[in-house]
Length: 360
Picture (cartoon, rainbow, N blue to C red):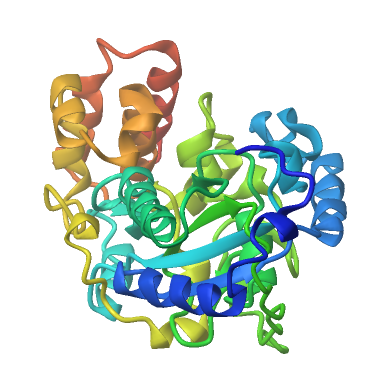
């Protein structure tokens, strides 16, 4: 995006109010549920981020502090940015009760619902690019860049500023009419569009998410210690999962949705119409033993085009080993664990040995 010194003059021939209305209309036609426009003033969110980093809550996610203030100052990341078009795209794949049933069946593997289908990065980015292209066809060349969890962007804070929803006590973005089961994407732009009003918070006195967190990772309202979060432990962490947290992981082998499952606002969520986000390879209802038996090639084949692949085969087996340590004791479980020992790395072996001990 070019660094324009006076975007107002550049676009003074445009009816920006009408253009904003058109952008929102076209975004919804492309499948986005919510669309809003935010300015780039994020000083409050920046302070919150710096305090969070100062407390060390990011754990091993060093990339959270790598980019300095570019995460909270859009124009530093993409020069010329004066507005952010913020969007949401629903991914909820199943009837309400199914995920709870899986969590209550220790022999089954629970995978965070966002990861059951195709990798959302590619799907959402392509859709955002289509929106940007449509804008360009209408008004001519303009400065923009699309993002979807792919760069240092405070997407939840921007979504709140854009009036889409509010950041809940679990630190996820919530909307009144779709809950929180959605992906967020942005278009940074030099178009001085009219900004929407920041959303109000509607959590009230509810603390269902805080009470439901298996590892007590929500250490205070609106404050998450990622080092305790199951999503961090099973996705971001590359080493050994702390022993004291393993039992609480239960059968969650990739991510965790508990704080969203109990959120009362998610009763308004509807199943997605996007085929790419529907479960693949029966990952929404499959046994731990079946997944633990995958060879590395099967893992690569079955996670092609999936967000799951990023953790790698070793961490995939590590997570399943912990879940098998938490499941019901039987000979099939013990045999599966013992069969994996000979060819395991030191890190994986330690988790398998822990799992075996849980059944003795």
